[in-house]
Length: 268
Image (tube, rainbow, N blue to C red):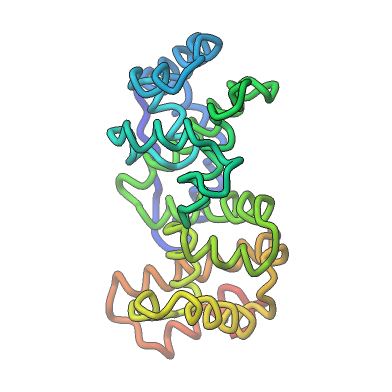
């Protein structure tokens, strides 16, 4: 049995449909043969993972683990993934600590083979946590096959909360956002920052995105932006502007009016 998640409608109407049906659709997707089979296989194999090779030489195990961190596209980068696990995160010079994308550091921390006791064996419940994250990512990826904007919207609130939890300061969190493509895409769109924004010096991007967040949402504090209310505001604004861009016929004034009517609590 296989189940393909779906969305009816676009923009805010599609978002409302998706949110109301996520529990049912996610449950059906988790029970589909490919996801259920990989989940069960991973749980069976987990206690037998003792070296990085036990992971990189088993594609199904790799698929589950990398999916749990949103890194499915790296499933064929075996040497790169092995290096991350072998070096871990304790050494400041470790590869994971040099990469801007915090997803790699999260992965290398949880599957750290640089210590006498591998990281994944040090946390009770790691196997179940990994499977749950894999299933969530697989569901979002399936949505993204036909509706990439809905995949980004679905993952935004969850991922920005994880990022805030793992960041040492608000300044560090913003740099992490700029280095995490899905989060950057949602915020750059929601804040109406043009494509040229990404060509600016990273420090200038850092300054401008925070200033724009303050003007639009009344805060540039990630702890506030990751709250249920403001994260939903960001998501709705992103979807409205993505829909307007895809149609290509909505004037700036019409877009502003739609945003104001759809999310009256936002500052524009």
